[in-house]
Length: 171
Image (tube, rainbow, N blue to C red; front, side, top):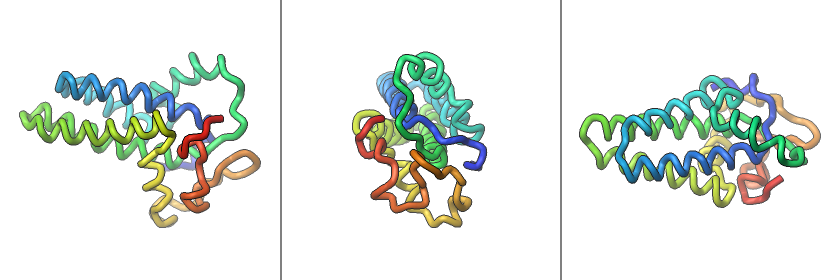
């Protein structure tokens, strides 16, 4: 998941995406739909592997929501969010496989874990996957992303001081 290609992001976008993801995962848990969870896995894959610019929920935020808001007072690195999308992708793939292969308990557990993480981000601004990313050794993260400067939070700082939006503050 190369992070160098992603510019810093509006910190409100991942929370919007987390709300949409939360709704999708609630429907998956209610219906047991491997197809819907597979579609959510595709959404996660686009954000994680192609870049946040290609994420359908990010596109919806940029075109329908962001123009109605004041510009963000600061931007955040995309790399932790992309990592979190990759973690969500892994859980969605495992869950979809569980539902599709007749192991609904596996589907339920994997979906519930993804739902819990999405809800934490949506409701409280706490991105679990981002926190994991920030605790990884820098050499495992691919080094500094280069997204630094005024108004940009750095992922290379300690996890306790980075990403105030993921701690509950909104821009």
